[in-house]
Length: 483
Image 1 (cartoon, one colour):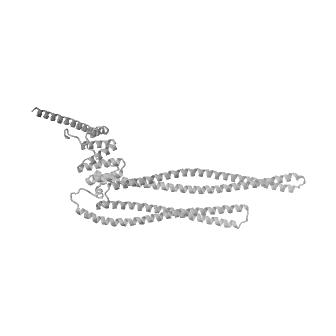
Image 2: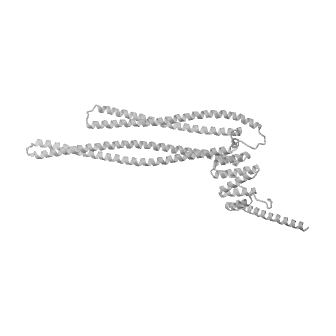
Image 3: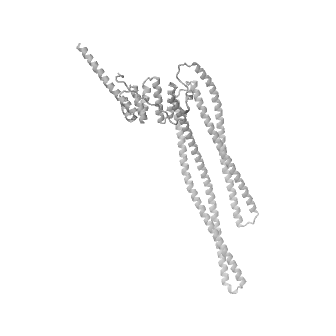
C-alpha cells in the first residue's frame, strides 16, 4: 500500500514538473508573440529564438522564431529555422506552403533569385490559389528580366564606349601624324625664311658698303638706284623675318597640339584599360550567373525525361521568349551596324570628292612654272591627296568590320528562325501530350501549371512595385499542450 502511495506521489511530482516547465516555455513563447505584435521585433527574436533552441520539436515556436528573425533582419537564422522545419517534419500542405513561401522571401532578400523562384513555384504547386505567392513570383521574374536587361545594356554601353575610345585613339594618332608633318613643314619654311632673310641682309649690306665707298664717283641717278635696291633688300629681309616668325609660331602651335594629343591619348589609354576591366568583369559576372542558373536549374528541376508535358511546355515557352529577345537584339545590332555604314559611306564620298578637287589643283599647278614656291605647293597637295586616300582606307576597314557584324547577326537570326520553327513543332507535340495527361489526371490533383496560375493576376497586383509579405501571425501556445 505504501509503495502504491509513493508511486502515485512520484508520478504527481513528475507531471507537475512537466507542466511547470512546459507552462514556462509557453509563457515565454507568448511574451515573445506579444513583443512581435507590438513591433518590437528585436525583443521578440531574442525571446523566441531562445525558446526555439529549447523546444526544437515545437513547430509553432520554431515558426514564430523564424518569422521574428525575418522581421528583425536576421535572414541567416530565419533561413536555418525554415529549412530545419522542411527537413525534419512531415508537414501538412498548408504549413508546408506557408514555410516555402516565407523561405522564398528570405532567399529573395538574400538576392538568391533562382532559389526564390523555385520555392515560390513549389508553394504554388501545393496552394495554387495563393495570391501572394503568385504576385511575388511574377514580381521576381520581372525583376530578373529587368536585371538581365540592365546588365546587357550596361555591357553593350561599355563595349560601345570602348569602341568609341579606340576609334578616338585612331583619330588622335592620325591628327598627331598630321601635326608632325605640319611641324616639319613649318620648320622647313622657317629655315628657308631665315636663309632668305640672311641673304637679303647680306645683299643690303654689300649694296650699302658699295654705295658708301663709291659715293664720290657716283652720279645722283646711280645713288638713287642703289638706294632703291637697298630698300628692296631691306623689305625682303623684313618680309622674310615675318615669315620666319610666322613659321616658328606655327611650329610651336603644332608642338603644343601634339602635347595635348599626347595627354589625351594617355587619358584614353587609361580609360581603355578601365573599360576593358569593366567589360571583363561584366563577362565574368554573366558567366558566373549563367553557371549559377544552370546549377540551380539542374539541381532543382527533374530530368527532361521525368518532366510532365506541361513542364516541358513551360520550358519551351521560356526558350521561345529567350530566342525572341535574342532575335530582337540581333536585329538591333544589325541595324546599328548598317546605320554606321551609311554614315561611313557619306564620309567616304566626301573624301573622294575632296581628293578629286586636290588632284585637279595638282594638275593645274603642273602647268605652272617650276619654281620653289610651286614645288612646295605641289608637295602639300600630294600629301593632302595621300591623306584622303588613307582616310578612305580607314573607312573601308570600318565598313568591312560592320559588314562582318551584319553577316554574323543575319546568320544568327537565321539560326534563331530555324530554332523557332523547331520549338513551334515541339510545342504542338507537347500540346497533344498535355491534353492526354490532363485527361488522365485525378480531379483532386491540387498541382497547377505556373503559366496558368499567373493568369489569375489582377491589374492592381501587376502595377505594384515591391515584394509582398504575408502578415505573420505568431501562434500563442496553451499551457500543458505539449505534454
